[in-house]
Image 1 (tube, rainbow, N blue to C red):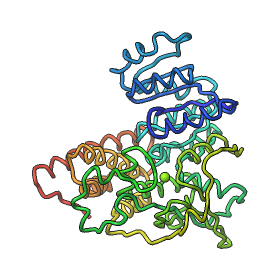
Image 2: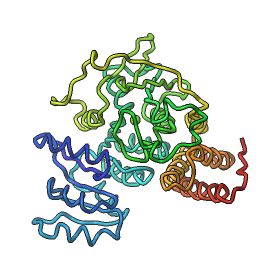
Image 3: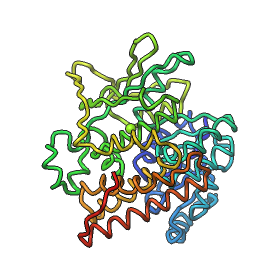
Image 4: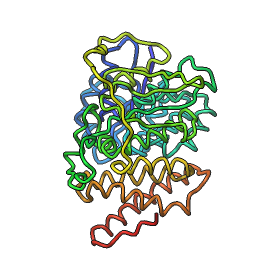
Length: 398
Ligand code: MG
């Protein structure tokens, strides 16, 4: 029985992970839970899974949570705030921590879990994108495993099983094309929030669904792949594959290409991150190639998806630039979801902020440098937004 802690338990990744745990009570035991602010759902989860320790990040919700589970005996250890989430991440005998927290908020808890010797089932790509220069050396130092739960990176990881060191030549990430794959570039100026939240294939949280529409998600995944698998950016490609059946591919030195296929269901990469290196039987719908029908591919449209090339450029710059890109994107997407900026402003804001950071890029950032870059980038996006609001022409340096 494997002991698991889950961070971000009330989000999309969290609820799907708990769905897996409830299907395999003999395989997995839940040690800790952490969530942002959804007291009602968190209380239900505590009742069902009886973890030893629980944290709620939003401190204002703590009394409500306490009250909601007052009748439970025994009581779990209850904590609040970001420090509470960090405590849950490093607590007890959990062997693996699933990081389903959205955004860079996952960075400190992930580092705490690594330092406590726990394997990481990485469902929070922002951690590695912003913190790669710090996280990767820690993984090595503490001898823990970083098991990708992002569907594309899980596919690559699965294909890599049995490939000897040095055998990998190229990574091909597949992208669905997101909500606007059939829209013209001209029409994108009229995008509403509801349009961006309609993902054609995957059921995911709001932030990542908008990231899929801009293809920033794929850009971030390019950087994630660089940190996970060590390839140069020239050897990581993106191809649009609207059906989302092939979850990604690898090319080996001899030009042989391996792919991993399945219906688009996040539970599969999550299960493999938890069961690796074992394969657990499931009764989930099996892939039927005839039912899947045609699998098609096309080149991504750079005019339509400027965030993609921006991510490549930022990845190549390295240092603290990916942290700035990631934070600027988180802030811009939040403003878009709050209807404070338009859809096309997302890429404009991020590009402007990245341009301003060029001259301050820190080539070998410490954790403090990364956190400072993250904070700075969020403020900068707010400043650009204020300029946009005033109707000032925002000056782009590039
Ligand atoms: Mg993905």
